[in-house]
Length: 78
Image (tube, rainbow, N blue to C red; front, side):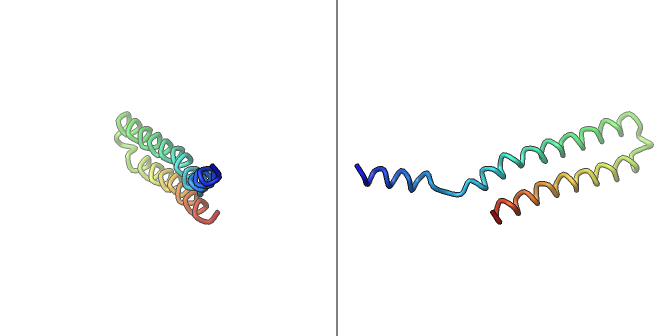
């Protein structure tokens, strides 16, 4: 009976950082989707503003992606 408990404890032990990162990656994923949805909506309404909206959308994408990169770096460090 003692061996069975030790095996189950070994199975449960592990690093939960990557599971936390997987859950936290949902935020930047949704954010990027919302950024480009707003960009497409804005260009559809005012095509002449495409160049201005495109630079803002790319900046927003870079900032949202930076959060995901920082999150995976922290998942591996901690």
